Length: 218
Ligand code: CA
Image: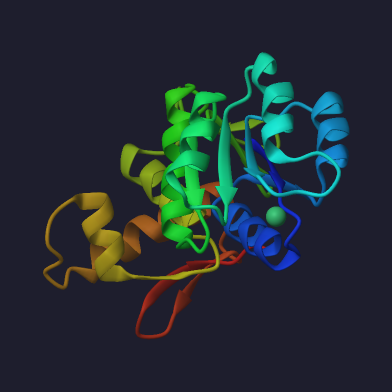
């Protein structure tokens, strides 16, 4: 799981970022001042740091100088929107810049872009009792390989990426089969039922009345 550190002293914003990144499948940790951040960065390996500029003890600019030699990408998150601050941050080596207030969707897009630039995309996904290697498309349940067809594998990933969200049969069909849904619910039902049986998730991927299916994970 990709690890992201959020350094932000406004707890409401830190919590919101934490929730959004966790939901999107990242491992996210928050710290609320620059000194704690420096200690944490020393001890742990992070794939990305989201960094506020105005911070207690050690500010974001100082922290950035400390982080850059470590080769960890940084996205500044700040209320400052003036051009000079933006230029200073980028000159110091920040990879991107996000100005508060921002939309979650923008945050996620920037995080994804920077991670991709650093070739830090997720290769191994661990969900519940499954381990998925997205490069070899190998799925293992408690160490035992499960043989899935291409469509079943894609279905499984779709559910994992949208865990705890009810997916319409229509959406499932269009995402997996790539064509317009013509009311062919049997195709979706058949594939979902076979896939969840193979991975032993009959109790986790459940039918949602009049909608479709949902993967329920705590
Ligand atoms: Ca701040």
